[in-house]
Image 1: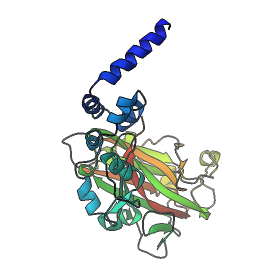
Image 2: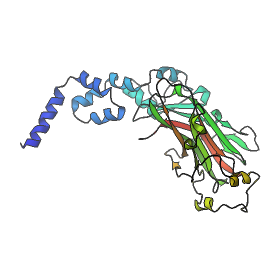
Image 3: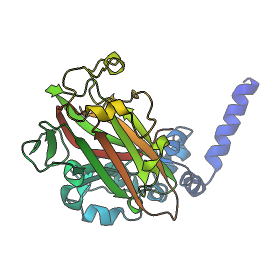
Image 4: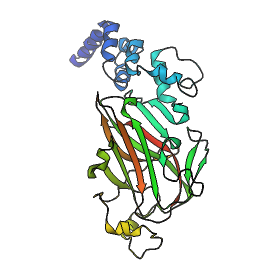
Length: 309
């Protein structure tokens, strides 16, 4: 046996000799992703990775209260979980609706951090209850009973709020508008929307927290730079755009993504939850400067989840 092979065998024997409880305690101080990786080291690590003491550290202390308040009374699935690992995976794979169907809750699989989606009904949508401009419909691919379909508006304003006490502490989060377009989507191909995220309504008022994004995945980017005062469909608010924005938002950002669940998402911004700091996070989507009429969006909600490193 060569020296390298001998060293590997020695390392394996060393790990196998460690008490399983000691390994489990060490794993509980890492992350769910690390535990899955460490379980591949050797059989004793694989066994320790199944301990309830490990996965209990990754499950929110209030998870039973959350599940009890959920619409379904549990985390989905066809059987009752029997181990903490199964509870954890159930909370990751089966989002539960809470708050009367206005929010959805689940865990981020790699980190165990709390995630939420605010349903469209939980958002503040200007003229959202006016049938001429918006209508509320049900679609099978939504996790909520209703979604908001934009009929036609010249002033698009959507806002959402969530208290940081609901979220995991010491975590960098990002917020995303989750929506769809339809074959009849119009009015978003030239004028970008302004999006922002701010803690306690303070950060959202700074230049660094406001950016512009295109909501139409099929829009032609160059049209934005070619928009002229004489362009058709300028609308009654067109002069506001020509006067310039109150903020230096810069060029529109490319951040629209197609999700695995068939919806689109666009990042609105990010924020950090510090331990001991409580307040409200406000998220907004505005398109009020183009002045042109626009329609054909279907909004499911705003999702708040840990920001990928």
